Length: 500
Image (cartoon, rainbow, N blue to C red):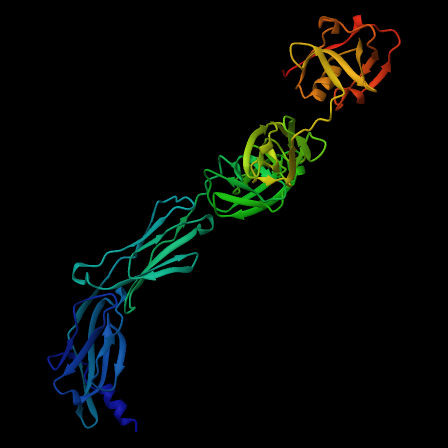
């Protein structure tokens, strides 16, 4: 049993001969498959096959077989040869050695270099990453895949060596690297890490606006406060405040240059100054204060007439008054008769508005007014007015000896007799009643009665010493009176009216 190993030991040492040959390439690239093949004149005689690199055994086979480097590396470069034990006799063998072949494994491509443009990006701006390497000319068609990483996490893997990030933010700062890899994937190389610091631009030029615009709002409706910045990147915290109390009304954090705060229901008590602040981690920046006025919208205005009732007479002057006491000025008022505009006016400081109308028969009808302070017009209730023709009872008074019936000495009838009126205290109010009773229009003068000759006869009585009219009576007989006690016809009263 020990004879065969002994014969092997005693066998002649192998020498380089033509019996054994080695076949392999002299050059290869990283990732290539390299096949080293040894063969003899009769492979069936091979009892043991050994492959060597730089003098060190790398593989052993019991029969003829090739040695394969499936994924060549630079370290596989070296001098390769093989040795075999071949059957020489029944109990002996001979060792044969091949010639040596030098294998050089070349770099397929160098480690990529990561390029960042711009090198110091700012928030909200694009960034281009480039993973740059170079293939040899004879392998220029080798397909490479590229991968980009941030802090060890994959951002993208693709056939392109370029990676475009449309927007970067502060939180995108970190360590970046890239990898280039053959499609097999047999060769993979990575770049050095590069730290990318994304710069944040501080907020500036903070301003506040309102919706509705101009700081004008109506009680009970929504008000929107709009806070804006001209510059600033990243997440910005917006806050809104009342100027007088510094009270915080609300806060929002978002990535934008504008933020809105809705106040669902604004009240008149909310009138005042407001401002906002913006902060993107560089400290808050405050806007100028905006004065907000909360106005009371018009509701239903009230229409009234100067006439004491719903009946007026042709020739009367009636004052129409329209007013909304709560609405905020300025207020515009319109006056209507049966949907026809009679007139309009604007009240800049609040209160109501009036419109005077000299009545004719056509002015009978339904009246209403309209008020508007910019929030939509509102109508009053309809008020009816009837314009009648004034009828005069048989006159108990007359003007004597004047140029026409509406001028002369004042005389009145009592119990079928005509007498005069003393001019003690006689004034324009008394004349106005006389003119009204006679249908002679407005009062003009209070002349002495003796101017209208001939003077009254001595036997004609003086009925009234003093008349105390307030000017609104329908007839002289309705005025307060003081009966005569010492008045003669030289003190008779006269009257001049507007009409003739």
